[in-house]
Amino acid sequence: MGCFVIVCCNTNQSSNLSVKYPYAINDFPPALHVYLLRIINPGFIGDKNYDSIQEIDSLISDNDLLRLTLAEHPLLRSVALSIASDRASIDHYSLLMNHLDDTARVSWYFQCASWEYTYVSDYMIYRYEWATQQDKEETIKKILKEHNYLISAYDVLGRIEIDESHYSTIKKMAERDIPIFQRSNALLALASFGKAADSTLLANTMDQNNPYLDCNCFEIMKKNHSDHFFEILKRYARNFRRRSCDVDDYYYRETNSECFLEAVASYRNVESGKILRTIFKQSPFLPCSYSRDTSQLKEKLYTVIIKNECEAYRDMTAIIKPILEARKKDELPSFELEVELTDTKPRIWWR
Image (cartoon, rainbow, N blue to C red; front, side):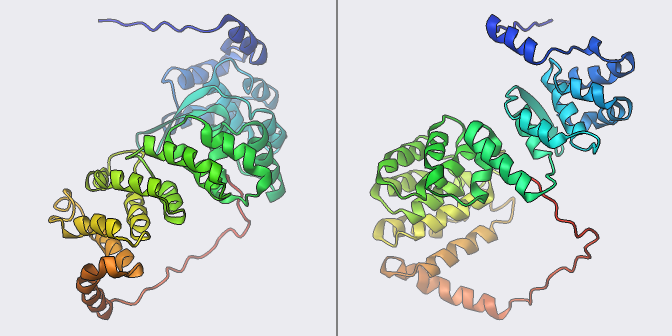
Protein backbone atom coordinates (compact mmCIF):
# COMPACT_ATOMS: atom_id res chain seq x y z
CA MET A 1 0.00 0.00 0.00
CA GLY A 2 1.33 3.42 -0.90
CA CYS A 3 1.44 6.29 1.55
CA PHE A 4 1.61 10.04 1.41
CA VAL A 5 2.59 12.83 3.76
CA ILE A 6 0.74 16.10 4.12
CA VAL A 7 2.96 18.95 5.23
CA CYS A 8 1.18 21.96 6.70
CA CYS A 9 2.90 25.27 7.22
CA ASN A 10 2.11 28.85 8.08
CA THR A 11 1.81 30.87 4.86
CA ASN A 12 3.52 33.94 6.25
CA GLN A 13 6.35 31.89 7.70
CA SER A 14 6.76 30.01 4.41
CA SER A 15 6.88 33.30 2.55
CA ASN A 16 9.50 34.67 4.92
CA LEU A 17 11.66 31.57 4.52
CA SER A 18 11.42 31.74 0.72
CA VAL A 19 12.78 35.28 0.88
CA LYS A 20 15.57 34.35 3.29
CA TYR A 21 16.48 31.11 1.47
CA PRO A 22 15.50 31.73 -2.17
CA TYR A 23 17.58 29.25 -4.15
CA ALA A 24 16.23 26.00 -5.61
CA ILE A 25 18.22 23.21 -7.27
CA ASN A 26 17.47 24.61 -10.73
CA ASP A 27 19.27 27.82 -9.77
CA PHE A 28 22.58 25.93 -9.82
CA PRO A 29 24.66 24.52 -12.69
CA PRO A 30 23.20 21.28 -14.17
CA ALA A 31 26.39 19.35 -13.35
CA LEU A 32 25.54 19.73 -9.65
CA HIS A 33 21.92 18.60 -9.84
CA VAL A 34 22.47 14.86 -9.51
CA TYR A 35 24.67 15.29 -6.42
CA LEU A 36 22.32 17.80 -4.80
CA LEU A 37 19.46 15.34 -5.29
CA ARG A 38 21.58 12.58 -3.73
CA ILE A 39 21.79 14.72 -0.60
CA ILE A 40 18.07 15.51 -0.49
CA ASN A 41 16.49 12.17 -1.49
CA PRO A 42 17.78 10.01 1.43
CA GLY A 43 16.61 12.72 3.85
CA PHE A 44 19.76 12.97 5.91
CA ILE A 45 23.31 14.27 5.92
CA GLY A 46 26.26 12.22 7.08
CA ASP A 47 28.57 9.29 6.45
CA LYS A 48 26.52 7.68 3.67
CA ASN A 49 26.47 10.71 1.39
CA TYR A 50 29.99 12.03 1.92
CA ASP A 51 30.91 10.89 -1.61
CA SER A 52 28.28 13.22 -3.04
CA ILE A 53 29.50 16.03 -0.79
CA GLN A 54 33.03 15.57 -2.12
CA GLU A 55 31.74 15.74 -5.70
CA ILE A 56 29.86 18.95 -4.92
CA ASP A 57 32.98 20.40 -3.32
CA SER A 58 35.06 19.62 -6.41
CA LEU A 59 32.54 21.13 -8.85
CA ILE A 60 31.07 24.14 -7.13
CA SER A 61 32.50 27.66 -7.37
CA ASP A 62 32.81 29.96 -4.36
CA ASN A 63 29.98 32.13 -5.67
CA ASP A 64 27.61 29.18 -6.15
CA LEU A 65 28.66 27.77 -2.79
CA LEU A 66 27.68 30.98 -1.04
CA ARG A 67 24.33 30.86 -2.83
CA LEU A 68 23.93 27.23 -1.75
CA THR A 69 24.22 28.35 1.89
CA LEU A 70 20.93 30.14 1.15
CA ALA A 71 19.24 27.18 -0.56
CA GLU A 72 15.60 26.52 0.25
CA HIS A 73 16.37 22.98 1.45
CA PRO A 74 18.11 22.82 4.89
CA LEU A 75 20.14 19.72 3.97
CA LEU A 76 21.74 21.65 1.11
CA ARG A 77 22.47 24.58 3.40
CA SER A 78 24.14 22.19 5.85
CA VAL A 79 26.33 20.77 3.10
CA ALA A 80 27.23 24.21 1.79
CA LEU A 81 28.18 25.57 5.21
CA SER A 82 30.30 22.50 5.91
CA ILE A 83 32.17 22.80 2.60
CA ALA A 84 32.62 26.56 2.98
CA SER A 85 34.23 26.16 6.40
CA ASP A 86 37.17 24.40 4.72
CA ARG A 87 37.77 27.01 2.00
CA ALA A 88 40.41 29.64 2.69
CA SER A 89 38.99 31.70 -0.17
CA ILE A 90 35.77 32.27 1.80
CA ASP A 91 35.31 34.31 4.98
CA HIS A 92 33.72 31.33 6.67
CA TYR A 93 33.86 32.86 10.15
CA SER A 94 31.50 35.65 9.08
CA LEU A 95 29.40 33.01 7.35
CA LEU A 96 29.19 31.07 10.61
CA MET A 97 28.19 34.12 12.63
CA ASN A 98 25.51 35.10 10.10
CA HIS A 99 23.91 31.64 10.02
CA LEU A 100 23.52 31.01 13.75
CA ASP A 101 19.77 31.62 13.40
CA ASP A 102 19.21 28.76 10.92
CA THR A 103 16.88 26.65 13.06
CA ALA A 104 15.61 24.25 10.43
CA ARG A 105 16.08 20.69 11.68
CA VAL A 106 18.03 18.11 9.73
CA SER A 107 18.70 14.43 10.30
CA TRP A 108 22.40 13.78 10.91
CA TYR A 109 23.59 10.23 10.29
CA PHE A 110 26.90 9.34 11.91
CA GLN A 111 28.90 6.63 13.64
CA CYS A 112 27.41 3.42 12.29
CA ALA A 113 23.65 3.93 12.10
CA SER A 114 23.39 6.61 14.80
CA TRP A 115 20.95 9.42 14.12
CA GLU A 116 20.55 12.87 15.58
CA TYR A 117 17.98 15.51 14.68
CA THR A 118 19.73 18.82 14.92
CA TYR A 119 19.46 22.43 13.86
CA VAL A 120 21.40 23.43 10.74
CA SER A 121 23.28 25.94 12.93
CA ASP A 122 24.20 23.27 15.49
CA TYR A 123 25.48 20.99 12.73
CA MET A 124 27.61 23.85 11.40
CA ILE A 125 28.98 24.69 14.87
CA TYR A 126 29.97 21.12 15.69
CA ARG A 127 31.84 20.76 12.39
CA TYR A 128 33.58 24.13 12.54
CA GLU A 129 37.22 24.74 13.48
CA TRP A 130 38.02 28.23 14.74
CA ALA A 131 41.22 30.00 13.71
CA THR A 132 41.71 31.59 17.13
CA GLN A 133 40.40 31.13 20.64
CA GLN A 134 39.22 34.74 20.56
CA ASP A 135 36.99 33.99 17.58
CA LYS A 136 35.51 31.05 19.42
CA GLU A 137 34.87 33.20 22.51
CA GLU A 138 33.02 35.72 20.36
CA THR A 139 30.91 32.91 18.94
CA ILE A 140 30.08 31.66 22.43
CA LYS A 141 29.05 35.16 23.54
CA LYS A 142 26.74 35.62 20.57
CA ILE A 143 25.18 32.17 20.95
CA LEU A 144 24.47 32.62 24.67
CA LYS A 145 23.10 36.13 24.13
CA GLU A 146 21.02 35.63 20.98
CA HIS A 147 20.71 31.90 20.27
CA ASN A 148 20.72 30.11 23.63
CA TYR A 149 18.01 27.70 22.40
CA LEU A 150 20.70 25.86 20.40
CA ILE A 151 21.96 22.53 21.73
CA SER A 152 25.51 23.83 21.31
CA ALA A 153 24.61 26.60 23.80
CA TYR A 154 23.63 24.01 26.41
CA ASP A 155 26.69 21.94 25.58
CA VAL A 156 29.15 24.80 26.08
CA LEU A 157 27.82 25.72 29.55
CA GLY A 158 29.83 22.88 31.03
CA ARG A 159 33.10 24.29 29.71
CA ILE A 160 33.04 28.04 30.38
CA GLU A 161 33.49 30.22 33.44
CA ILE A 162 30.08 31.36 34.67
CA ASP A 163 29.39 34.55 36.62
CA GLU A 164 26.38 36.61 37.68
CA SER A 165 26.11 38.19 34.23
CA HIS A 166 25.06 34.79 32.86
CA TYR A 167 22.31 34.20 35.42
CA SER A 168 19.24 35.40 33.51
CA THR A 169 20.30 33.55 30.36
CA ILE A 170 20.97 30.32 32.23
CA LYS A 171 17.69 30.59 34.12
CA LYS A 172 15.84 30.88 30.81
CA MET A 173 17.74 27.89 29.41
CA ALA A 174 16.96 25.81 32.52
CA GLU A 175 13.25 26.59 32.20
CA ARG A 176 13.07 25.58 28.53
CA ASP A 177 11.15 22.33 27.98
CA ILE A 178 13.68 20.13 26.18
CA PRO A 179 14.95 16.59 26.96
CA ILE A 180 16.74 16.34 30.30
CA PHE A 181 19.99 15.01 28.81
CA GLN A 182 20.29 18.29 26.86
CA ARG A 183 18.93 20.53 29.60
CA SER A 184 21.01 19.23 32.51
CA ASN A 185 24.04 21.45 31.82
CA ALA A 186 21.78 24.46 32.36
CA LEU A 187 20.34 22.95 35.55
CA LEU A 188 23.83 22.37 36.95
CA ALA A 189 24.92 25.89 35.97
CA LEU A 190 21.80 27.35 37.59
CA ALA A 191 22.44 25.38 40.79
CA SER A 192 25.97 26.81 40.96
CA PHE A 193 24.52 30.25 41.77
CA GLY A 194 23.11 28.84 45.01
CA LYS A 195 19.88 30.85 44.89
CA ALA A 196 17.16 29.42 47.13
CA ALA A 197 14.49 30.68 44.72
CA ASP A 198 15.69 28.20 42.09
CA SER A 199 15.48 25.08 44.26
CA THR A 200 11.84 24.40 43.35
CA LEU A 201 12.56 24.63 39.61
CA LEU A 202 15.54 22.29 39.97
CA ALA A 203 13.69 19.76 42.10
CA ASN A 204 10.52 19.74 39.99
CA THR A 205 12.45 19.39 36.75
CA MET A 206 14.49 16.45 38.02
CA ASP A 207 11.43 14.87 39.65
CA GLN A 208 9.49 15.02 36.38
CA ASN A 209 12.37 13.43 34.47
CA ASN A 210 13.05 10.59 36.88
CA PRO A 211 14.41 7.96 35.94
CA TYR A 212 16.23 9.69 33.04
CA LEU A 213 18.60 11.70 35.22
CA ASP A 214 22.28 12.06 34.38
CA CYS A 215 25.52 12.93 36.17
CA ASN A 216 24.77 16.67 36.15
CA CYS A 217 21.53 16.06 38.03
CA PHE A 218 23.22 13.77 40.55
CA GLU A 219 25.97 16.36 41.03
CA ILE A 220 23.31 18.93 41.97
CA MET A 221 21.83 16.57 44.55
CA LYS A 222 25.24 15.63 45.89
CA LYS A 223 26.34 19.22 46.45
CA ASN A 224 22.99 20.55 47.67
CA HIS A 225 21.51 18.19 50.23
CA SER A 226 17.78 18.55 50.80
CA ASP A 227 14.84 16.31 51.68
CA HIS A 228 13.25 16.93 48.28
CA PHE A 229 16.42 15.97 46.44
CA PHE A 230 16.79 12.83 48.53
CA GLU A 231 13.23 11.78 47.69
CA ILE A 232 14.21 12.04 44.01
CA LEU A 233 17.20 9.77 44.66
CA LYS A 234 14.92 7.27 46.44
CA ARG A 235 12.64 7.19 43.41
CA TYR A 236 15.57 6.68 41.06
CA ALA A 237 16.83 3.83 43.28
CA ARG A 238 13.74 1.79 42.35
CA ASN A 239 14.93 1.77 38.73
CA PHE A 240 18.67 1.65 39.44
CA ARG A 241 19.26 -2.00 38.48
CA ARG A 242 17.25 -1.75 35.25
CA ARG A 243 18.78 1.56 34.19
CA SER A 244 22.26 0.24 34.87
CA CYS A 245 21.63 -2.47 32.28
CA ASP A 246 20.11 -0.19 29.62
CA VAL A 247 23.24 -0.10 27.47
CA ASP A 248 21.10 0.07 24.32
CA ASP A 249 19.38 3.27 25.44
CA TYR A 250 20.90 6.08 23.35
CA TYR A 251 20.39 8.63 26.13
CA TYR A 252 21.82 6.50 28.93
CA ARG A 253 25.47 6.51 29.97
CA GLU A 254 26.99 3.90 32.30
CA THR A 255 28.62 6.69 34.32
CA ASN A 256 25.11 7.85 35.34
CA SER A 257 24.87 4.86 37.68
CA GLU A 258 28.24 5.69 39.21
CA CYS A 259 27.17 9.31 39.75
CA PHE A 260 23.95 8.11 41.38
CA LEU A 261 25.93 6.01 43.87
CA GLU A 262 28.15 8.99 44.71
CA ALA A 263 25.13 11.21 45.30
CA VAL A 264 23.35 8.73 47.56
CA ALA A 265 26.47 7.89 49.59
CA SER A 266 27.16 11.59 50.22
CA TYR A 267 24.04 11.87 52.46
CA ARG A 268 25.57 9.55 55.09
CA ASN A 269 22.34 8.80 56.92
CA VAL A 270 20.15 5.81 57.73
CA GLU A 271 18.00 6.22 54.62
CA SER A 272 20.98 6.43 52.25
CA GLY A 273 22.38 3.38 54.02
CA LYS A 274 19.20 1.45 53.21
CA ILE A 275 19.49 2.28 49.51
CA LEU A 276 23.17 1.31 49.33
CA ARG A 277 22.61 -1.82 51.41
CA THR A 278 19.84 -3.02 49.10
CA ILE A 279 22.16 -2.65 46.10
CA PHE A 280 25.09 -4.15 48.03
CA LYS A 281 23.19 -7.32 48.94
CA GLN A 282 21.63 -8.01 45.55
CA SER A 283 22.59 -11.30 43.91
CA PRO A 284 23.24 -11.17 41.07
CA PHE A 285 24.53 -7.62 41.48
CA LEU A 286 22.61 -6.55 38.34
CA PRO A 287 20.13 -8.45 36.15
CA CYS A 288 22.64 -8.21 33.31
CA SER A 289 25.62 -9.48 35.34
CA TYR A 290 25.48 -12.78 33.45
CA SER A 291 25.78 -11.10 30.04
CA ARG A 292 28.27 -8.28 30.61
CA ASP A 293 30.99 -7.12 32.98
CA THR A 294 29.54 -5.15 35.89
CA SER A 295 32.65 -5.26 38.06
CA GLN A 296 33.49 -1.57 37.51
CA LEU A 297 30.13 -0.44 38.87
CA LYS A 298 30.42 -2.85 41.79
CA GLU A 299 33.85 -1.46 42.62
CA LYS A 300 32.38 2.05 42.44
CA LEU A 301 29.78 1.03 45.01
CA TYR A 302 32.52 -0.23 47.31
CA THR A 303 34.67 2.89 46.98
CA VAL A 304 31.84 5.42 47.56
CA ILE A 305 30.83 3.58 50.72
CA ILE A 306 34.42 3.69 52.02
CA LYS A 307 34.85 7.32 50.92
CA ASN A 308 31.75 8.31 52.90
CA GLU A 309 32.40 6.00 55.83
CA CYS A 310 29.96 6.62 58.67
CA GLU A 311 27.98 4.78 61.32
CA ALA A 312 25.10 4.15 58.88
CA TYR A 313 27.48 2.25 56.55
CA ARG A 314 29.47 0.44 59.27
CA ASP A 315 28.28 -3.12 58.45
CA MET A 316 29.14 -2.67 54.76
CA THR A 317 32.55 -1.09 55.34
CA ALA A 318 33.50 -4.03 57.57
CA ILE A 319 32.98 -6.35 54.58
CA ILE A 320 34.38 -4.04 51.90
CA LYS A 321 37.68 -2.95 53.47
CA PRO A 322 39.31 -6.42 53.45
CA ILE A 323 38.23 -6.90 49.82
CA LEU A 324 39.74 -3.61 48.65
CA GLU A 325 42.94 -4.16 50.65
CA ALA A 326 43.41 -7.60 49.10
CA ARG A 327 42.83 -6.13 45.65
CA LYS A 328 45.50 -3.47 46.20
CA LYS A 329 48.12 -6.11 46.94
CA ASP A 330 47.52 -7.76 43.56
CA GLU A 331 47.25 -4.46 41.64
CA LEU A 332 49.38 -4.26 38.49
CA PRO A 333 51.46 -1.09 37.89
CA SER A 334 49.76 1.41 35.61
CA PHE A 335 51.43 2.71 32.49
CA GLU A 336 50.90 5.57 30.08
CA LEU A 337 50.73 5.07 26.37
CA GLU A 338 53.33 7.21 24.62
CA VAL A 339 51.89 9.07 21.65
CA GLU A 340 54.08 10.76 19.05
CA LEU A 341 52.61 14.16 18.25
CA THR A 342 52.68 14.86 14.53
CA ASP A 343 50.75 18.15 14.66
CA THR A 344 51.53 20.61 17.42
CA LYS A 345 49.12 23.31 16.16
CA PRO A 346 46.21 23.61 18.62
CA ARG A 347 42.84 22.59 17.20
CA ILE A 348 39.89 24.72 18.32
CA TRP A 349 36.60 22.80 18.09
CA TRP A 350 33.31 23.25 19.94
CA ARG A 351 33.68 20.03 21.93
